[in-house]
Amino acid sequence: MISNQEREEVAKRWKASTAQIYRQEADDTRSITSKHAARNTIRSGIFLQELLKRRIMTVEKVVEMRTDAWIRTLSKRTKPIPPEDKREVVEDVKQIISSRCETVERAVMEKAKQILGRKSDQLEGWKRQVEQECSRLLARFKSEVECRIMGLDRSIQEKRKWKRTEKISLASAAASIIATAVSIISLILSLKAFHK
Image 1 (cartoon, rainbow, N blue to C red):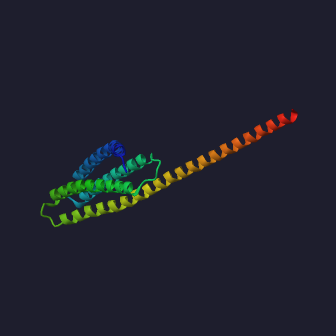
Image 2 (image 1 turned 120 degrees about the horizontal axis):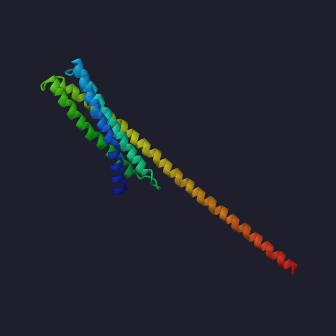
Image 3 (image 1 turned 30 degrees about the horizontal axis):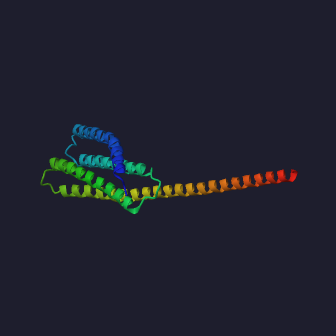
């Protein structure tokens, strides 16, 4: 079972790593807006497409950071990761994607309404495009997170196997040393008895 301490560590790692990503997105959004304003294409689909692409890129980076935070936190474990913990991590990442995608959809659709008009026939098409991008992210990261956890689990199990083998080897070596020492002592005692 994932502990509260592990959840807190993931949240702390993630928060620290995402601050710069959001700052960069804000800078890039201003830059994209200025570029299209200068070209007089601010009311075009090209502007909306760039805006959507940039916001989806942010979601990807944020989710990658969340996944990294989980993997780095769970890598401290010494026992195999149980199925319920794997499910919790996958669900957590899916929740992050859903939450961020809702934000993207609101932002892009609001901008689309401003550009195309609130009654435009094109709005539904933009909404579908956002949904498709988010579905793609969900499928990609679900698979990616599962693969990374499986890899981490294998690594933990191999370390445990190596440690067990190492303990057996050490115990075997210790037994061999003791047996040798007993043989030497027996020989010394035999020689002493012989000289008497």
